[in-house]
Image (cartoon, rainbow, N blue to C red; front, side, top):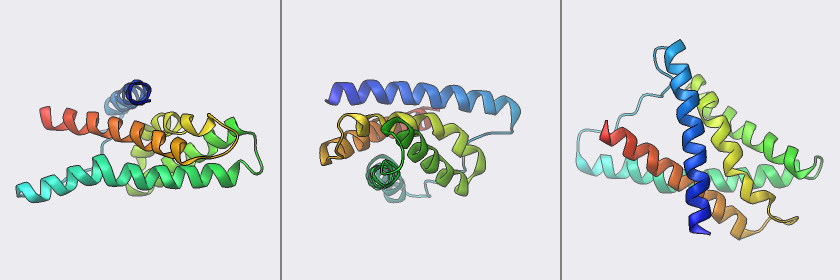
Length: 144
């Protein structure tokens, strides 16, 4: 399961990178401002929030949206709608960011399609993909 989640995270990161690179040519920069703070403790808290806490919260939100939408739509369309709503929520913070995270949000919804019933394992797999994705993004930022 971990290897599959890592592979899907690589796919989602590549998609976000391509969209972000394309937007970078059109806009001044499609990335939201990231202030990690002046000290090491603030940096550790920011990284923990990006890599652990927000993926878990967003996976729970994505699973909840998927469950509610799948009452009316087919599972694939429910995943697309839930991923689009998650990306739209990112746009509230910084509008181009929703475009960058739309494809990854669809990838994060893939585990939710594995069974007809939403399970904790599917939500955990979605969170793991998101965690790996964000860990790659943080590593990319810190290396730059």
